Amino acid sequence: MSEAGYNFAYLDEPTKRMIRRAILKGLAIPGYQVPFASREMPMPYGWGTGGVQVTAATLVPEDTLKVIDQGADDTTNAVSIRRFFQRVAGVATTTRTAQASVIQTRHRIPETPLAEGQILVYQVPIPEPLRFLEPSETETRKMHALEEYGLMHVRLYEDIARHGAIATAYAYPVQVEGRYVMDPSPIPKFDNPKLKSAAIQLFGAGREQRIYALPPHTRVVSLDFEDHPFDPAKADAPCALCGATGAYLDEVVVDDAGGRLFVCSDTDYCETRRAEGRVGAAAE
Amino acid sequence: MGAVTQAGAVGAAAMVAEAAGADGLGTGGPGTGGPGTHGGDRPLLSAERLTKRYGGRIGCGDVSFELWRGEVLGIVGESGSGKSTLLSCLSGHLAPDTGRVLYDAGDGSVDTLALAEAERRRLMRTDWAFVHQNPRDGLRMGVSAGGNVGERLMGTGARHYGNIRAAALDWLARVEIAPDRIDDRPSAFSGGMQQRLQIARNLVTGPRLVLMDEPTGGLDVSVQARLLDLVRGLVREMGLSAIVVTHDLAVVRLLADRLMVMKDGHVVEQGLTDQVLDDPQHAHTQLLVSSVLQV
Image (cartoon, chains in turn yellow, cyan):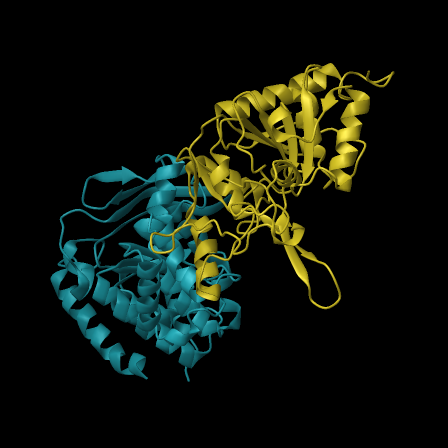
């Protein structure tokens, strides 16, 4: 049951229609940033106002919602947003990736491969990949329109010149279907290969008032040089709790003596594996 | 320095060119191009009756000229005479009210002002180059020297880091910047080095036409001399055509084959550089020439 006095999913219907139009346009032009009239939400900018508006416009009463923050279901941001939609939309919620129909995420893509019919909603702080190379928004929009993306490679060149390798580790720029260069939001570059997915991926930037999208199975290529190809870095150690080797790991400091533990950042993935009886070195 | 000793050589070249141009006024013709000329029976760039007004005032009025392959054209005049307006109209930074700018790279002439923006910008970063007076306008100050030189290459599709870096090193050497400065940012460079870096950044794609706006402005004289020496060498070596806007008559004396003098937006006199400077006909040119300080 949703809270009395609120429209379903908090936003009024005309606003949801406006956002849905932006989403549809974004899906029609993958990677293109569609401007939309971002609303004030009952949370500060930077806490996921864009993602929340996209989720609100996407939700239907039959949906099951999952919210993650850096892969975890139990962090403040994820818990607040999940509870928010429980109250204003009355939708079912879950922490299981496979059971969710809409997943709102901050900075991660779930490890479990997404299926057709699922929608992944990203919270985006800065949608413009060229922002720190070209400060003028007029100019960057022109560069997108004319497909002038040489500057993006200047940034990667600088990385190699200074660090010997492409040091960009998150928000790694991608090119969508050979056309638009897109900021995949600050996901680790480890997640970049998962951008090619069976699910619909929607990106909402509330403060910047932009929505963009990737339809299912869109071709997404991470930018690189021929002699310095893209490398989605992988952790050297398996997860200490569930023993997973192909997952993105968080470093946890466990004592004052420099002891540390590497565990899956995707809590649902880790719990599912442990429930199946797999154990890592620290859990034995 | 070299600049001083080579002044005589350019004078001689201009004399040869003058002998070749039968009319002596040098209003055009393949012969006036000097030793760098590659021939061709059509001009590389022709401006036809360019006019730009700022409200009721004239920025530049009814300017027509032709630039041939391998030729360096100087445009001089005092502040406010319309030289920078003219250069902005030519480069597409400003849209003139009337007139055409035709560019012929050898495969038929195109009206650069009527081109779609995408094509005009592609032309700007491949075949054309623009050297700003202030290197800060032409360089990315937050990007290393190598990145600055490589940007045009990456903008035209280069995707091999090793090749881009090799091209950058080659060009830094050609403009006399030490190879170990390749990863330094331009903000750590002196004014003269920044200007040389800007030139390298512009010439790396092998353009045919270079537009320069006061390239030596704000540099002290010995640095100026070296820069002029360098530019002259590159122009000759690469067979570049160039348009140099300046108020410094000594600069055009060294660089330009042909000279246009502007006043109040109009061209008042044009001809071979040495001829105009040694025997100025128009009262305003006479004033300009006689105003040069003697050391």
